[in-house]
Image 1: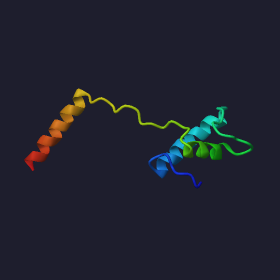
Image 2 (image 1 turned 90 degrees about the vertical axis):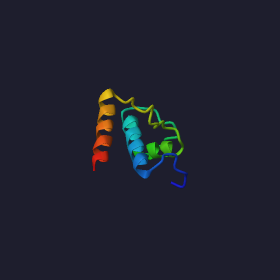
Image 3 (image 1 turned 60 degrees about the horizontal axis):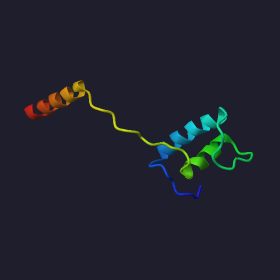
Image 4 (image 1 turned 135 degrees about the vertical axis):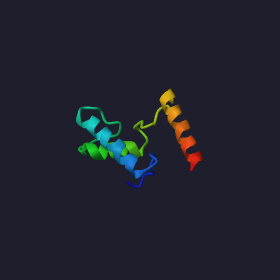
Length: 80
């Protein structure tokens, strides 16, 4: 594993690689030369080479209930 990590943390690397390994075990085609390696090793190599999309996606929109909670929290902190 001398390659540079593409993901932002070891924790996320494990999550993304394990998710990809499950896909491979269910029959997904490898994006790298597989040979006789195990799905977990193939998934780790795919993640290291940036072949697995793991983006966060767009941020969630705030709901009116969340905005009210934020205002209440700000008002409570001003009281103290």
